[in-house]
Every structure is written in C-alpha cells, then in structure tokens.
Length: 537
Figure 1 (cartoon, rainbow, N blue to C red):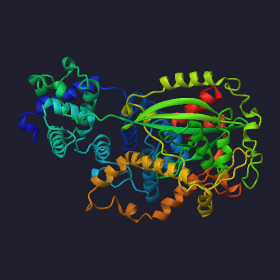
Figure 2: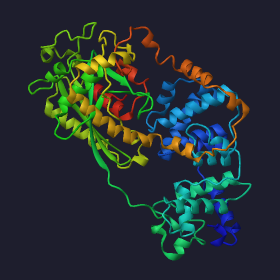
Figure 3: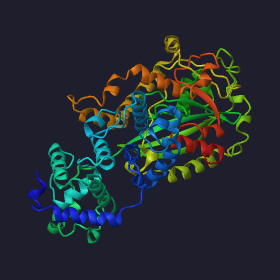
Figure 4: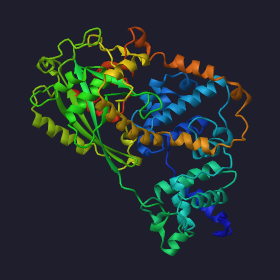
C-alpha cells in the first residue's frame, strides 16, 4: 500500500511534521547524545514502560553503566538490580548478553538493521530505531504511536494486528519517510503519536490535521482498528515469608523462568478450595526442605505461627494476580542434617523473632485490615503501563524440589544446587504436593512465554541468509563469552563457596532488611518486605 496513493505529493506533509517536531519535541536524555548504546538502552527500557519512569531509570542506568564496556563488566545481579521495577527481566539479561558478546569480540556496535537483528533480544523495531536515530540510516520505525498516526492519517480500515494490516503499515511508513533525515522523522512520528495523536487525540493541535483522512471522514476514534479486548483471568498466589532474628528466607529464581535471577519469597499457586495458611506451609516446606507435616501443624486453627501479612494485587498480560503474603514464625531451628530440633512442638516455640516488627502485638483482625488497605493501593489496572505488574511469578514449588538444609545461625549463607539429591527427596514427598506443584508450573510456563517475546521477535525477523556482524563476532567463541559472564557473576555467588553444599534445588539465603536493598527483587516482594519491617525497602 503506497503512501503516494493517499498523498501524491507527500513533501508538504513531511515538512509540517518536522517543523512541528523541532518546536514541540521533549528534552529527553537519550536525545542529547544519540549514540547506538544510548538509543538501544532507551528503546528497550521504554517497551511496556511509561516515559516518566523510563527517563529516571535511563539516567540511573547511565550513571552505573555509562558505556558498553562498563556494562559488559557488570555482574548479572548488578544489572538486574538496576532494572528492578521495569519488569520483563529477560530484556535486562539480553542487554547484558549483547554487551558481553560485543565486548568479547571487540566489534563496534552494528549500524544496520540486518546485523542488529542478530544480537540477543533486539527485534525489528529496536533495530530500526538504533539504525535510523543513532546512525541515520533510511529505515522507518513502526511502534504503537506510529500505528495510530498512520492509521488515522490514511484512514486505514485494516486490523493492524493482522498480517495484511502490518504489511500495509510498513509500506506506508517507508513511503512517508523523509530520506536523509530518517532519525528525526521517526522521532517526530513517535512524538506526535505520544503527545497529540494518542488514544484521546488532540486533533485541534495536530500539525497534520489538514491532511488527516480519518478527521475528514469522521473516523478518528475508530482508528486504528484493534482486536476486541480479552478479559483477564484471575490467578491467586500464596507467598511464605519466614522471619528469624530480623532476617528473611529467600530463594533465587532459576534462569529461563519469569523473574530469572531475582531473589523472592517462596511462593506457589492457590487452587480453589485450598486453605491459604496450609498452602503457605507447603510452599516453605518444599522450598526449604522442612518436614511438611511439621510446618503444616503450625497452620492449624489455634496456632499463630503462620499469619497473614498482606494481600497485594497486580495485572499481567491476561491475568489479574492476587498474591497473599503470609508470615511464618517462630524461628526455624534446624539441626545440621536438616531435621527440626523441636518437631512436635513447632507451634509452641517462642515468637521472639517478630518482636521487633510492627506486627508483634497485632491481632489477626488488625493484620487483615492492614492487608486490605495495602491491596487497594497496590492494584494496577494495566500491565502495559505498570512496570510493577510486568512479571508474573511462576510457582517456587516444583516436582523436582529436594529437601534442603539451611542454618538460621548463618543468615547470609547461600544454598547451592544439588540435583543428585532430588530422587531421594521425591521418594519421600507427598503425591498431593507434587500434583499441586505441577499445576503451578503449567500456569507459569504458559505465562513465561510472554517474557521472551522480544527475543523471539528478533529470531523470527532475522534473515537466515544474512551475513555475520563482523569476522570478529563470527569467530568469537561461546566459551569466551561464557567465561566473561562467569567472572562477572562470581561476586553474586561467592557466599556459596564458603559453605558446604546442601540439597537445596534453588539457591537460597537469609537476608536482613538492609541487605534486601542491594538484592534484585520483584517490586511486589520488596513491597511485602517493606510492610513487614515497617519501612521502605
């Protein structure tokens, strides 16, 4: 679909767009120095992120990692910590992969779409933005803002998510592009869509109003043609917070999953009809290797060892997620072999570990009121505009979880993975807990695919016949990149070497409130920690 079929002489339209942009454009930090690195970081950050939040994160990122070399030398934990709150953490991991790949090969940052598409996590839009804005290549960008502008300008009545609609938009964008000023043109189109031609368009202020066919035909609010919205599916999760001497028990999410590499409170899915306190007991017993019957005894009526802390809500893609956080006390005193020291009297142990918290003397009713208030203020209506809603957790329980030993006396120790111990643990585990775990993982696996969408886009968009980025990149060995990654990540896992390996399937540790500030965690879990300790994490 040719742009000239709508506007035989597009030059006046282009001139009006660029003239408006030169006057109305916002002063954004990545526009001051348009390097491939800065444009790349800003474009990836602004996916599913509001501009105000993206700007603050970008400036902090540039203070921490001002160039490709400093980013490549950083550990994954440092990168995830800087990304914390933006969600879709696969983006941060792919950024780090790309930085290490380019640094290891001593290759310059690619300046064309073909080579950019070969880098981890870079899709067609991001590649086009880098090539045009930073390198002034004559390539058009099509994002949601550009889709609105072109759909209304040309009164496009095709569904923009259909193959035909996508093809038409790409052709229109190419035909309207101002050659020789592609970077400026693309930014002008995106700025116009963000400031003027939004979901509630300000047609009276639009520099292209005299040419807009949708305005002429009275179809502005009908463009672009979008698919019917789908209702969100409710999903309830339970998270267990174990507190001992003002330290909390954390597990680290495995790579390749949602929240991969982040520290979390153990959690799992709540099925219909299940008692939340018993689910919390099951989750912590599976995550930490505590005898399930002992922990569940603490959740029985009349015991106060497991109590509600907060109910926090968020939205992610098609899910409305409610996470019920439970506080487990008293302290878990475990022997060196992992057996509880006081198994039968778990409920009767003193509650001293929570004496320093604001909930030490709270009644169950006051705790429920607090939870209700916090859930109201933490509800996010739209996943696309809520970075805290950007990463839905899968269950921390799994059928491969083995028994684990951890020492409450060594709160900063890290448990290391020991898959060899899994068979014996599975043999003694209850079929019920495994069935529940499998259900949780099925849901989590389906959701996790959304977290890798940008990487999948890059893979599909890349031409199979495209040549290598450069001879240096082509010959850079996977071993070299992996060695660099292992060296950079050594700091995050150093504690593991200082303690004998346990049978914990996932890395785990105890952390004080002060230590939580330096750990990458999902915002929802960090908020729960803030409610527990009575101050902002």
